[in-house]
Amino acid sequence: MRQPRAAGADIVLTGADLSIADVEAVARGGVGVRLGEDARARMAEARAVVERLVAAGEIVYGVTTGFGDLATTFVPPADSVRLQENLLLSHAVGVGDPLPQDVVRAMLLLRANTLALGHSGCRPLLADRLCDLLRLGIHPIVPAQGSVGASGDLAPLAHLALPLTGRGEVEVGGRAVPAAAALAAAGLEPLTLLAKEGLALLNGTQMMSAIGALVAADADRLSRAASVAAAMSCEALLGTDVAYSAAYQLARPHPGQIAVAGELRRLLRDSTLMTNHHPSAHKVQDPYSLRCVPQVHGAVRDALEYLRGVLDVELNSATDNPLVFPQGGGADADALATGGGLVISGGNFHGEPVAISLDFAKLAISELGAISERRIALLVDPRLNGGLPPFLAAGSGLESGMMLLQYTAAALASENKVLVHPASADSIPTSANQEDHVSMGSISARHAAQVVVNVRRILAIELIVAAQALDLRLADCVEAGLHVRPGAGVVEAQARVRAVVPHLDRDRIQTSDIEAATVLIRSGMLDDLVAE
Image (cartoon, rainbow, N blue to C red; front, side, top):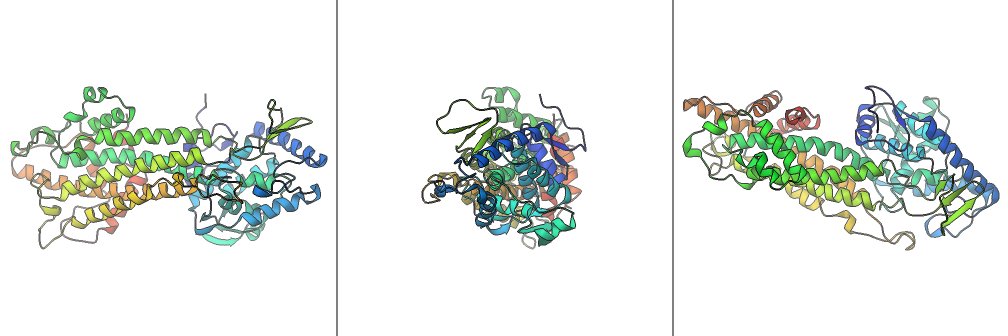
């Protein structure tokens, strides 16, 4: 069983037990990383196998041959260093905006962790140097586009690896500088890559997995914030919590549905607004965007659980090719037996597991935004919001209030409908048809990350609109002589929203309000409201 890491302690890379929480801690929290001693020994043992192969002049893909469709071209041992150098140079063809710093840090971590498994055949020095870049804040500049996710994320990983050799550019302290200058300033010598090491740095799913891990971490906070926003809207719209009852959920016991309904009951506990509002506002049933929150949000939770399961495996997998097994791996027609081990060429670099899980996740996450936008529409519509002013404006007509917030939410929800098209459904052959099926997993990952950003903003808008509606609803109750209060969790949520977004008493620019509520969600400041 994995032991919890002590607060502030370095993460020791073993290749076997890295978690999504660890990835976020390194990528965004600056937690230190170092190579474990057992992993160091495994890497050294696998390296010895590679060196024996080169010395013996054996023909092994990527070690003494070209790459892709050039796998049948033998490269003499004397050219093995140049082969690895050329591999990085020729594959660094990424384009587009640079990946965010947290993604690059996650990529460095995941590349070091997969090397730590000891199947890549490279020196421990490579993993140490990747950890050095993390420790020193030297972040390779990695263009976001160019990977088809087949032999892994080749182009992005080439840009990630180039700075180890003193080539390419890095970001240090917010400035782009030549990698050679950054290494010199840090007292590090550029590395000369030996046989197999360039390939060991390029093959793999570390871009899509890095983005995926951060998407999973962000989506967990999003799903909790969605429960908070839905509970606030339910109170403001004079909804009922009857449909959230435990007995009802257990009649269709999907795990996510049960969990979300439990969170709603916790947020709405002790509400007298829900039970004592004016009889004329009573509804037999709420609209689906209120009544079916456990079913919709719960399905999202279950999809995210699938993503986490795939990533738990992928973060701790050997995704290189070929793989080195110093102790042997049994008889295999595609394996090259050596004097003390086995080298097997296969397809662990293919990104399909991650691509499909991210396509599934981005579709699911988008639904949090789609149903939230519908609750926003209910809140601002005077025909549906239970007697609140049109668009929750102080003076309807002269003031437009929150009319345009729903427009923005609708635009974001509509954009998501384009982004959730499954990238993994596409494939364009590469390398002269040698790589004739590809995953497009990096595209799945980038689109999933954008969906997270869009949904976070939609939920931020719902928090703002629901808080305004609650203010007006409670003022109406006081005027009618009703002494009521929302559920305990909703009261606290309202207070936290109001700490960063003031009540809208007249029209104003609300862009900064959206950003403030977005930060509230992104920082996880609402998570404890739904904790067990």
